[in-house]
Amino acid sequence: MIAENLHRIEQEIQESCALVSRKPEAVTLVAVTKSVDSNAAEELIKLGVGDVAENRVDKLLEKKQALTDYPQVKWHLIGNLQRRKVKLIINEIDYFHALDSLRLAQEIQKRAEHQINCFIEVNVSGEESKQGITPAELPAFIEALAELDKLTIVGLMTMAPYEASQAEIRAVFANLKQLQVQMKELNLPYAPCKELSMGMSQDFSLAIEEGATFVRVGTALFKEGR
Ligand SMILES: *Cc1c(COP(=O)(O)O)cnc(C)c1O
Image (cartoon, rainbow, N blue to C red; front, side):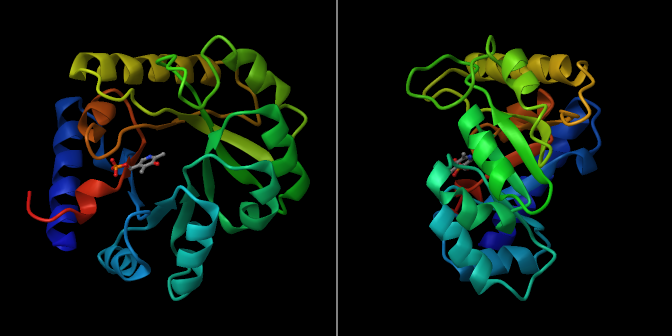
């Protein structure tokens, strides 16, 4: 089942790339394993998936410990991170997708033993329930990170609004793409900002059409049937 799901998702990624003349290699499938155990994660890794994500610190550490046979795997923390947990996790991951405050960035700077690839989470849709920096705050936020030499700002991340139409979701993704281009054009050495982490099981095709370079897919990999 997992193999079939993966195959179908990889095909959909290729089709979405073809629609907008992008190379499939430009899109990284990040497998979100929060709803499954480490055996299911291992199955995916054996099928060639190289990027695994969890949204909680304890779950990521648990999976990583169970999967030490696969040192090639890149680990992504995609959920919000409490400052008191930074020291537990920051040196265990390759990417952090939810940087959303200066205090958190300062804690990462303090605890990191190597360069940490971070995405700034942007609340494009302006939903009050959502995490993330607003688009208006983004330029000042990114400039405030200049002193923190342990963080590399690789790009921007967003979550599409819940229960939105296809058109609304597409607009959110297009908006994040625009912001990413603007941030990249600041030419800040610590913030190359080339990547876009957007799109989940329901909307990764739309996200790819709008420029996603990392899609975070969970449910679609593990569900039964079609
Ligand atoms: C759970 C989660 C995903 C994956 O969602 P699915 O709908 O299961 O594909 C992606 N990003 C974040 C931040 C998540 O928490």
